[in-house]
Amino acid sequence: MYVLVILILVLGASAVAQQKGMTLPKISIEVGKATRPEDVSVTLQILFLMTILSLAPALLILTTAFTRIILVFHFLKQAMGTAQMPPAQILVGLALFLTFFVMAPVWNKVNDQALQPYLNNRLTMNDAYNKGVEPIREFMLRQTREEDLALFVKMADMEKPKNRSEIPTYVIIPAFAISEMRIGFQIGFMMFIPFLVIDMVVSSILMSMGMMMLPPVMISLPFKILLFILVDGWHLVVSSTLASFH
Image 1 (spheres, one colour):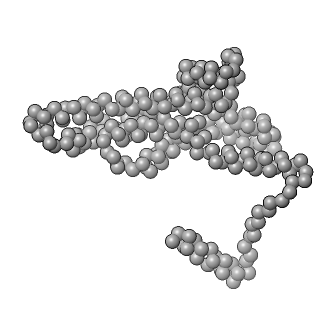
Image 2 (tube, helix red, strand yellow):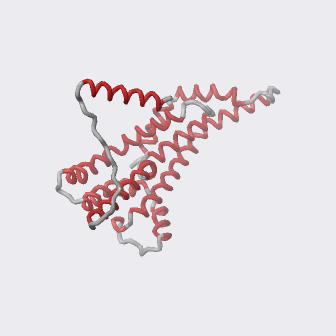
Image 3 (cartoon, helix red, strand yellow):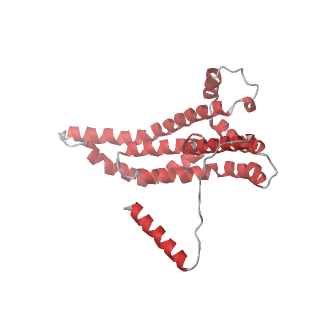
């Protein structure tokens, strides 16, 4: 159905353009034989760019603050016992915007130090990459535990680096990812405790009243929501999560 609507819109736009004497642009893709080394180089660059674009979601998740934030939101949803509320789309969207908020200073440095100089022909591609990846490396290193970093340095079977600038990026990324997961689980555990206390109290009261057939979740859920509202839960969770980044 959506394809049919898009086709009708395209045909309608084409008819209007022909009536007004306008021409629509033509796009063609040609596959030929590479006869010069420059052609092979351009082809390899295009393949490399397509590979990077396919990995863009993984790069956004595992090299930014997104992992920790979405883990905290998931644990909060599980602790409250609300299976459908808030919807997963809302949590992911909020996690993305909070990620943009946390990563804005880093991306501004990348734009000022690498992207804009490269677009203005003041840097080569290699120099722009080296300068652009440095702020991201600094951010990840600030959040990564030394134990996790040492683990992947050891597993990479490389010599002990003299300083952090000698650590390859492919070693920093997995170390940063497991450090983020560790902190996300820690925050999630702390959030579970007050809701678990409410479940235990409600279960004890129901058992003492002989109402063992009544699911405790049905009774404890309103009290969990009430507690979350009284302590201004979203403000507390978001502020604590953002404050955990350094």
